[in-house]
Length: 185
Image (cartoon, rainbow, N blue to C red; front, side):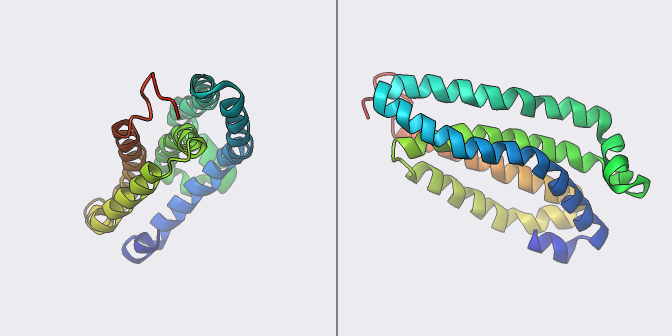
């Protein structure tokens, strides 16, 4: 975001803040889930083992994922209305920012289940490496994306960084065998 403030116009940075502010309403639900899901997952793992943990995390992720996924078509259809309602008509030209944040919110839901799974198994290295790779991507590509594509480049970079985090953590966790059917952690 700091680089965006240097490269992009104040209006474009304001558009990102608008998207973040509205997305924070959804993130309150994710924060509540972050307080409940890991504690419950640890109890389930202790009482029922790895398979019960997997079932619980898949269910809880799907419960969160379905409404988050619904945000995408809703923001495609109603982003102008939402921006106009919250910030006024002069900002509706930036309503597309809400669509980007709907995708980012959906990826945050996926992160919740994966992060909880890795933490319960006390295997945080995949998550750390995911953050490392995602950060490296951001450092290398933020400037060219923002210079070349402006606000859309910044939003793409933010979304891609989240997806890179998820994918790299998944790949490394799979490499460690953390998703094997016969895992006895």
